Amino acid sequence: MPYTVYILRTSSNTLYIGQTNNIERRLKEHQAKSSKSAKYIRYFATCNLVHSEIYNSRSEAIKRERELKKWPKAQKEALITRNEDTSLS
Image (cartoon, rainbow, N blue to C red):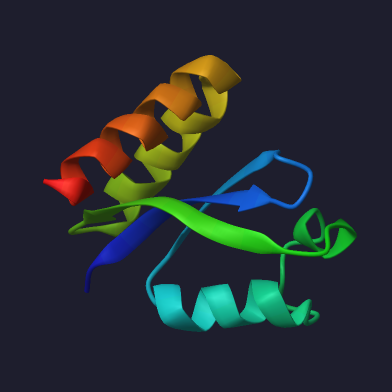
């Protein structure tokens, strides 16, 4: 089962990083501000998916999530920008 590591940008321009085995469901939970949504995301009016990566196992996804969370914001922004640049090609 594939797992997705994702980055959301909130309406206050902060970044949230998470991982899931069902990205569509998880995004709906965040946008609906449901009880299953991350508490952090509930404080913001909106959030948008700005980056995602797919991994074959949950352990790989968790490892990558932890790695990204340690990065400074500038490095995360560079990753997002690179992703946007490659999706335009």
